[in-house]
Amino acid sequence: MTGLVVLANTRILDVRKGILTDTQDIVIERDRIIDINRNATLKNDHRRIDLKGKISLPGLCDAHVHVTAATPNFPELMRWSPYYTAARASEILRNMLMRGFTTVRDAGGAEFGLARAVEEGFLTGPRILFCGKALSQTGGHGDMREPGENFESCLCCAGLGRVCDGVSAVRNACRDEIRKGANQIKIMASGGVASPTDRISSSQFSLEEISAAVEEATNANIYVMAHAYLPRSISRALDCGVRSIEHGNMIDQQTCKLLIEKDAFLVPTMSTHEVLPVMGLEAGMPADMLEKVSFVTEEGKKNFPNAWKQGVKMVFGTDLLGTMHEHQLLEFELRGAFQTPIEVIRSATIVAAELFQMSEDLGEIKVGALADIISVDGNPLDDLGVLQSPDRFLKLIMKAGQIHKEDC
Image 1 (spheres, rainbow, N blue to C red):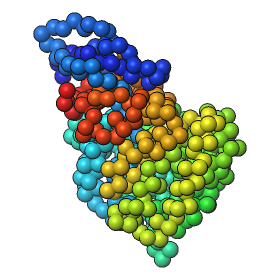
Image 2: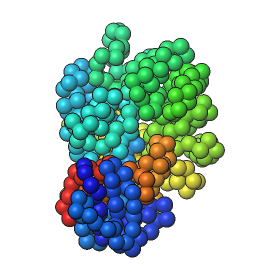
Image 3: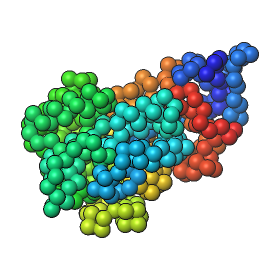
Image 4: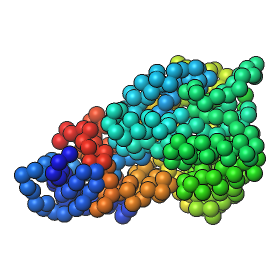
């Protein structure tokens, strides 16, 4: 893009202070914000977009997605062609961006090729922070073999995980994903819903294996995110240095204290647990796996408000699968039941950016940051519903200075 772009006459949501500014102009050069002032000077090669008083806020972040999961049936996904998987992911990615999400953190399945295709403009979607394949022990949450299947797991298929047992194998798997450009390492530290042979209540990987993953990630200046539901699994991961706990529905007071002590993050994914019982079977989730969902849904609704009151840092994440991706914005409503609108918005902006170790680039409209900006016709501080109806309220979507929607 040549010249500058000026987003004129917009009130900016200062997510850190939780206030709206007076009318401002945001000046963008290439992919960055270079100035914010009240009357930007225009030249012939500048493009001016008059937002007419609409509210602008940072592009949203979803810290737990699976962009390659066009089906919730993970054993079936393993049998898909990688080309077919990428083609199906293209629609998921585009729809995420059209909801206002300019950055997503993939928790298993996406890899450098998909992220690069988005970055270079061959696919339309949010910026992808990928882990590659999530790491699982044999029989863990990332092992999609049925009890009667004895084939060796491989890396050539389109599944979300890879199996590694023992410290040496974990180190090798971490180094391999780091070699391929992983932004973070994902481990399965407990059982889960969408896996055929484990129990949600199980703890997975030895302490030595988890510590090895953390050491390898730290050596590469990245971090580890861990799938975990119960206090024991959460505590084991945190004690080994894991930075981000995914789901955590059964978190208790003692584990909350440990999260705060370790300066770690919790990524509840309430929307997937809310939607799975309603849509899971029709979307392709095996019935026996769906039986696990009720065990975690109500616990999360009870425990997450308590965790928030204790001061746990919560990040916006959804974990939706297949056709259920369309409910990505439901997370705002579910979080809004116990957080104020600005607190929910922060979880999808500055707190997410802090987790991603990208606070200089993401999460705020400020000079020097990437020009990830959405503009809405309504005030999300008064009503989170403004962010839940993009067809009605979302008027501008800009990612890294590129405009993907303009309806001003």
